[in-house]
Length: 126
Image 1 (tube, rainbow, N blue to C red):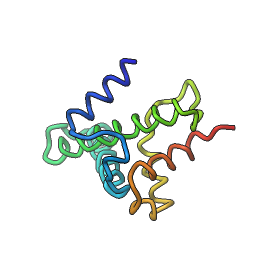
Image 2 (cartoon, one colour; image 1 turned 30 degrees about the vertical axis):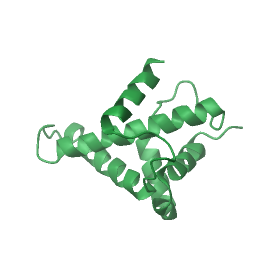
Image 3 (cartoon, rainbow, N blue to C red; image 1 turned 90 degrees about the vertical axis):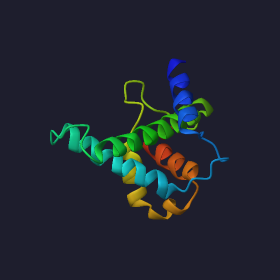
Image 4 (cartoon, rainbow, N blue to C red; image 1 turned 120 degrees about the horizontal axis):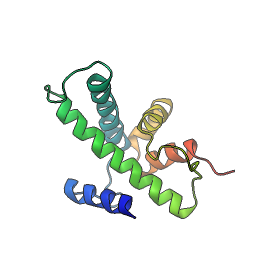
């Protein structure tokens, strides 16, 4: 319950929601997620300071990306459309980025359609 509240709060702060009413293209989400992953890798794997130019902005993009994916996973899970294992991490930004790279046509589709496809591929139901 608290996780849903935090996700909703993030979307209110960002001024958007996870819905078809926000027709963001998949390429936008892909770009945010990819830049966010690179920033996190620079900070945590290469030892850069978080406050270095570009890291903070890219880090914010990673937060937006993660919130979008969390909302998608929650929605699909509640509908019974995906079956994530109980002991797995909730968010998989890298899996979404990799799915976009394998299916570049999704970058031109609505972000919700594209992210849903990536999540369904990651957590299919038997």
